[in-house]
Length: 391
Image (tube, rainbow, N blue to C red; front, side):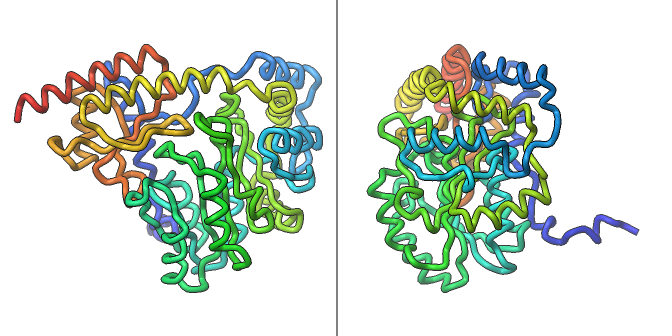
């Protein structure tokens, strides 16, 4: 008897993350500079850590209300309004265990079996896996021909082809893995295509504080009645391990989303909620020094890549560079990345791991120190020069 054969059959459609596997391989490679990890290399701000210590000392060790402590939701409501002009009352906010739980909660809540989820690619693979686990059908929209952005024409074309079984459109901006983002005008144009349709919009804005060239734009301002917003403090306050996300939607929708959240997580940890409250109340601009450092790293890497013949969009947000391998080098991105790691001691994620449109590309995360950036780029230069000399 093999009990694995009797588990949820949808799990057979989901493969372990190749990104995580490649990152582990990079960590196990002596001397390698790792550009795979998508998390801040900064420490959580001191005042946030002190708030957590105070919470522990005050014996805040019991269950919080399922949807989150009221003080944190109030702080989140104020933060979103002041920063982005997004209007969510505390009753329209659920505190989740990171943005990942928020995404899972949304997808499981809105999908019926067989319904479709539109996912622009290249993308963070979590959306695809969660859709399949929920019994939905991911519809992958290759955006490589439109500068890695979903356009109104591309969206309309997809909707016409996929009929009325589309239930959810996923938009992540700034985008992991490409670093591109949308202007408010571009988002407004997308909103015009889906306005009034029975389609939810899941807007993953976890990188909202990492916009380099513009004020953060959001569909939540344009089409709030159809939008479910995902955000949190992981990237903005270097709090990935604290696992606090925010899920925001109109009250009637939030009440339904709360059912999945309640019966899977119950509640996020009280101590980490207290820390997140401090971050949002008293550290709204904590990300600014981090952003300045990220931008410095971005510019350094982009210059080296350009000089070597790599091409790709200038990242306008997040902390990723998505770049096309030069045509005179191996265009098999998986084989190239593996050889670059083993022979060149530089770890960058193969672009095809992020779906259609990523073939022949690499993703570099610059959420690492400037010293690592400079050492890694020197190793990359040496590797490329060696490859070209051998031709």
